[in-house]
Length: 546
Image (cartoon, rainbow, N blue to C red; front, side, top):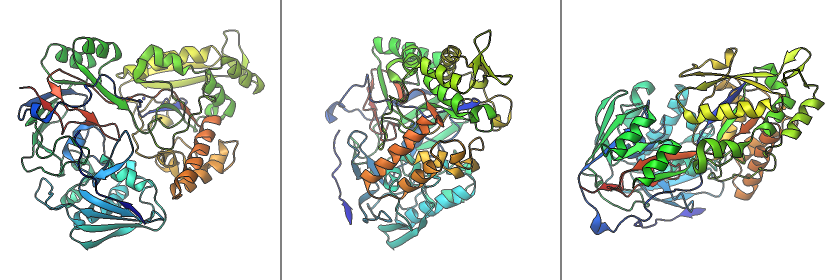
């Protein structure tokens, strides 16, 4: 049996282009932060933190990710983003059996949800049983596949719960340590998923005081909060009394408000805006997103994209370094795999992703795609044209697509761009394709969720049999399923590496750039910000000069 012992708290966008770009951001470090927080004697209590944030549709941590839901909710355990070490939170200790089928959690005493319900073994049981209910109701995308072999949660006593699976579940603990499995009050699972987006009870250091959809949100600290993560630099109630959030879609407005001193934090600044803000004495906080990079996901309902040569040629035609240098700079280095470099199990395949327009042309020549008079290739009277819809309000996606259009044209591929605010959920059925955002994930099993044969049920633009799109036959499906239940970490890493290689080699996925997550610019009076293992900004440790 593997024992997880208690540790004392320490101070401290797809182009479904005919391909669809799923954007789950990433980055490798935190830059511009103030470093170690100031001494505890310098900490000031009370005060208001004013934030201009991007609009968000939900605060429920199981339906959406971000800094707001992390301020409202806690998890059983936490994970150090630098070392990968698990540390106590709502559970003081835990055990995992050798086969990774049983996980025992020993809960701390005295912790409660904001509605007064105790955080006990029955609450843990309700939360894990609630995953099945969410999945049955069409929710729980982040957890899809994680509970395929869930047997149930046994209540040993009020402080001890044992979670059981019929097959090994290596990704389970990693997910438990994130907001995707944050604990909610059992009553929250009696609420419709849509209502629960903004109406639920959790155990975090802040609670919702008021909310005006698409306009504002006010969070107030819980005066009785006393169960912070073992990674927290401050125990007890949050130092900040009030967080005043205004939802502002325009990046320039967010940046201008911080420049003028009207606010304390501006979320997701532009590259030039961030440079100017830092030069003016503000700090930048970000970390590479854990999960998927920006990538082009093939819409296999398009006959043109079913052509392996077209996908492989586009893979080689894209200059990822140019996109990084020209659009995002240091916050988004070129992707070297289909999962990000911050994710355990990542392997670099930059040799397969290098910019090589000569090879791209050769691939198309060999497949019978010949240049026309205008340079765009054709085959059997069909022009090699991929139509793409991009998000008009996302500068990274918009500017990246413009560059990709130019790069693809150099090898004879025409990309026609159309920008819109919302292409709708049935974009894949239309004559054009859609650039959409992907998701964070704490574990590389996200590749199985997307690219397994059953992935088409949730993503109808994919395939029902990977052998139809891969030269490796059914091996992709095999390795994706094997890694999900392989308890030996070295064996699982090898399987994940093989899956990544197949996805890249057959251009089933076309990764572009990694990108930042938890990205904010903070004024000089803000201290103690940090980011968690899922690259969410943590404000529970923060304090402001008053």
